[in-house]
Length: 112
Length: 114
Image (cartoon, rainbow over all chains, first blue to last red; front, top):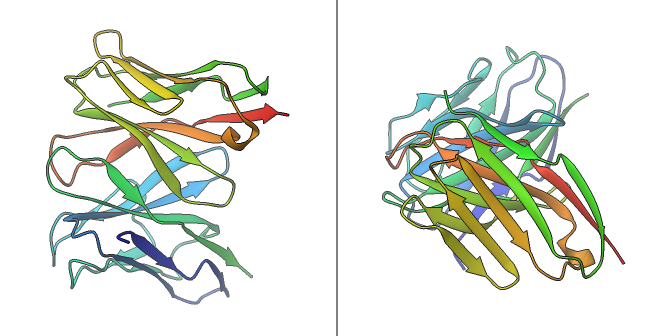
């Protein structure tokens, strides 16, 4: 079955470390997105990519980086510059045209 | 700037009741509107997608309506069940392109009591 796979499900980061969250889709979708979800604040867009080798900053890109070397993959790196990284991270994808969005199951990142 | 509001923030109902969740948006020039369900600690599951040219969509016990002129959408759940307990989110895209970003409401947390 087609879908979006996020890994790991849980991730723990020490202060000063960079960590990378994986997002893979086999839906042949063109666009991919990273959202952050905090309690009581809803979902906020971090980065998005419409095509391979191109991506744009969202509303809260500081302290994060992404790459889009393959259509299927859109990894997110949470750098040490992100001061409050503890959150639930959701990856999504969308096919070009008038289609809806498909979300992954999320990665919960905790700073220890 | 598009803003999406969902009312109520939380709702608790007895099993079997029909209920309505509300979503409003400030800019009526939307491309489409999507309703999602989120279980605790899980990702978002798409429930219904309504195109801007449509007035409603149905899937099983769920019916979503869209009134662009008034900036409102409703999600109607018939004969609610405990398994319907979850947070329901509505979202609209900002642009009419494949890279369009979604603006989300903050959700309605639904509890259906047996």
